[in-house]
Length: 441
Image (tube, rainbow, N blue to C red; front, top):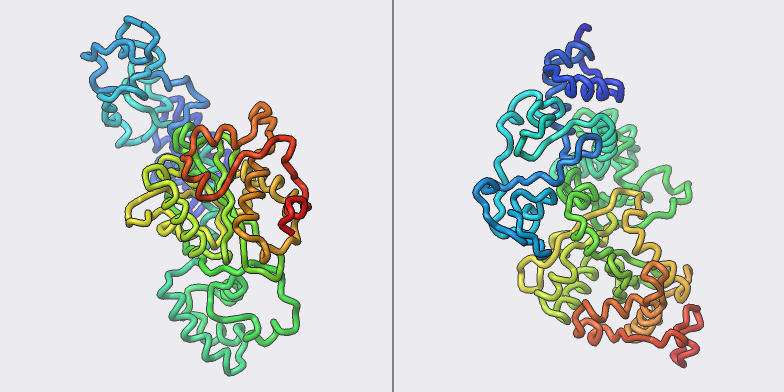
């Protein structure tokens, strides 16, 4: 088949690549079959290969230690087994042995075809290295998300953006439209007029809609203020995909972070921190819905329970891409300047990726329904609300209240500092009248 330049690979091509790799075909033969260059196929394989063995034989039990042949360790699993752990089918030494050192990557992976799909050593179980695979379904999904991510954020550097604004803003003050400006200066700018309009709507620029000649004729759409907007790739290494690469226990021990905003009339917001494993949710009142207030709230929590206890309890935070959470360096930096936690971000418009936190907001909204202004709510009143919500039993916990489990795991200073206490099950109130029934309103 003749080589087609500039053609994007589709699902049919990727299935062809997977099938031919499994049959042991070379990269050159694959490229000739689907009609693209050798480099295109090589980049596709290296870019989208994965360690996922879902579609192949299960290799999770393979012993990958360099010292497996000479190792004499026994009974690391504490079951009374007298067999050498290095020969155990469960390969527990990969996870629990302190002397475990993984073998170097297979040298065959440094050259084409870069994956183990058709490797005879893997098929005959003679391979003693960690394997890489090319899977068409996973590659196609990853490529689709790459297209979406490539269109998010700001498609130019901060310096290019500042230079563009320096040219555009004086001309707009003269009454010139963006269409006119782009007709005369468009070749100097890294983006088009339509994209510049979008940047204004997002609040990225210090140009408001009122400065646009026609915008004053239309009712502006409802949107959140954004004091920070990430530039492209600013969340690299902190996406939900990176979060999923963590060990399962680390994922389950993560804390889901979100904000519940007030109705019009108040800048206050409630910062919520939910512990995934036992659904316990901390609530902290923020004076404003900003990243600075979020950082100060986390600083106060760290000072309540101490840095080490904070790192043990809040080691990984999972949150959305709201502007109040985008300063991950400040969030992850301890009050003494060291590291205290790692921050990961859900995909855009995917609130279900931190569904436990969103579900628990349903319980909070039973007491503070949407449309409630938080201006008159004090920290003491919020602690009472938090106590009632966490004393509310959960079927997912077998009928246990989150606070019953949290009180045995989290530092006692945290409960004392935030004034969170256990409420008798019969006295739990999950209605807007809670504060009035307690005589606080």
